[in-house]
Image 1 (cartoon, rainbow, N blue to C red):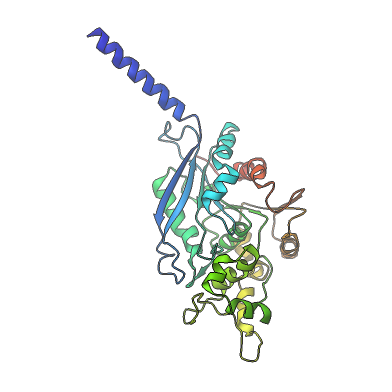
Image 2 (image 1 turned 45 degrees about the vertical axis):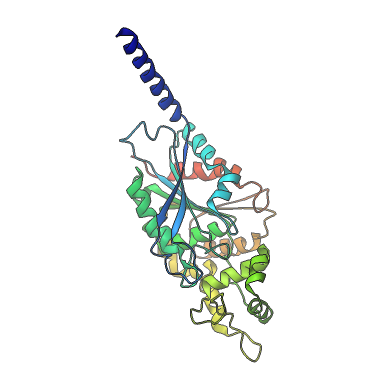
Length: 337
């Protein structure tokens, strides 16, 4: 009997040790949730969206503890899996916790048939904006021990995700209190030229499948911001190309209407409610001029923000800066229990 009891106690002790060890590190969870906002889009982008959720060490050991949440939006031509491989978010959350900054980090899938929905809304790609600002936040609050209010939510993103960060923050000021834009794309108004319109209209499905980053980006943004559900082509977009070879001004007006530089004056009340607003970009980044123009507009309209120009290009220091700048920024500005 004593032998059986000893074996049982030893097994229990082993389980306890294993459980304690399992709590020592931040945890990755690959989840799926259904987005009604994405459902029914003309590209056939799945409504069942992958979400990466990273919980801090000790999350399971403290069932009464609630945590602030940092939402991170990935860039174009990428998926959450690709960004996890590059950025190692579990290590970033682990390091933040060791510095006293325990947070949950959430990264949703912003991918589409054309490599990115730009966290925007339209019938061709689907409503990624509502998916992030409404459905995702509601789902995370329901399934994880968050502090479910804006003061404890931060939003950050890189490249396409940097664009998504400012777009969502401007249009949904009651959801996130602090934002951090990293090397944001698409800040300036885009222009559809007759040459671009002819090239896109001539593209076949095989051409789209074989297109590189630069060739496809303009197609993807057009599908997002100039959709046409009645178009005969498989892309379901409006290039604006007219019989006389010119481009319908309405198309370029639609593209401009999705530019943060253009939108900014309309959303000053929303931006002025932010607890904190940070922007950074590398001095060798190909998107630097667009960021500079946006910064000039922020200054002209008196929007408080912090900015850093650092040595680097579009991607070579993002993983490092998530650890050294982004998570510490949210540690300073997000409320905790």
